[in-house]
Image 1: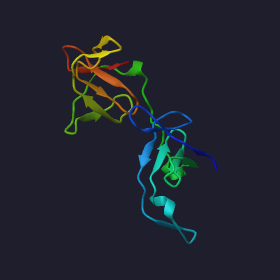
Image 2 (image 1 turned 180 degrees about the horizontal axis):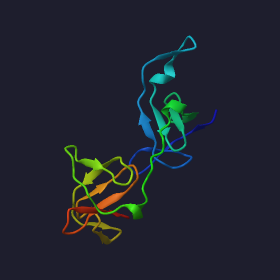
Image 3 (image 1 turned 90 degrees about the vertical axis):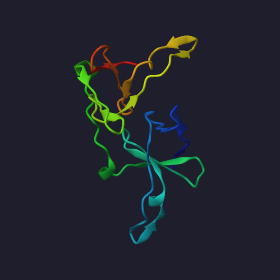
Image 4 (image 1 turned 45 degrees about the vertical axis):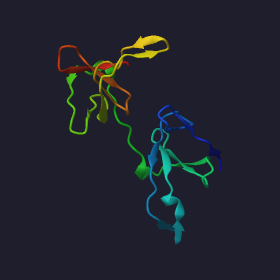
Amino acid sequence: MAVTRLQKNSENNFTCPTCGQSLRKVEGGTLTVRDGKVDMTAILPRYVCDSCGVFYRELLNSGYYDVFDLPENEKRKPKRVISTGDIPPTQLKRESDGKCPCPRCGERMDFVEAGPVQIVNGRPDFSNTMDHFKCPYCKSVFRKIVGTDYFQWSDK
C-alpha cells in the first residue's frame, strides 16, 4: 500500500501526482453493504483524476492519501476538444447564470468582466481590460472582436 501527500495548485485544488491535472472532489455517499459487511469507506470524500482513472482517499485524517483504481462505471469518457485553428469566430451570449457553452469542448464557460489595468512584474497587463469568456475545462479564452458581436479564441 503506497500512500502519498497531495499537493495543491494556485487555485487551491489538489493535483494528481502522476499527470499534474486538478483532481475532482466527490463527496461521500451513503453506507453500503458489500459481502455482508458494512462499507464505511463509501461515506468518505475522494479526489478523482479522470485522465489517470484513479481516485485518492485520505487515511485517518493524516494528510496522506491512498490511491485506488476508478471503477469502470464511474470513468468519464474523454471529451473531444476541437483544434484552435478549426474554431471560426462565433457569437457567444451569456445565459441567466452568467455562463455559455464552450465552442471548443462543449462545457460551460465563465464570463469574466473587464477590470482595470494591473501591474505584473513591473509591467502593465492589459489582458483583463475587456470582457471575455474563460473555460475552466479546456483552458480556452474567447475574447471579443472589436466592433462586432463575435468572439475569437485567444491564447491568453
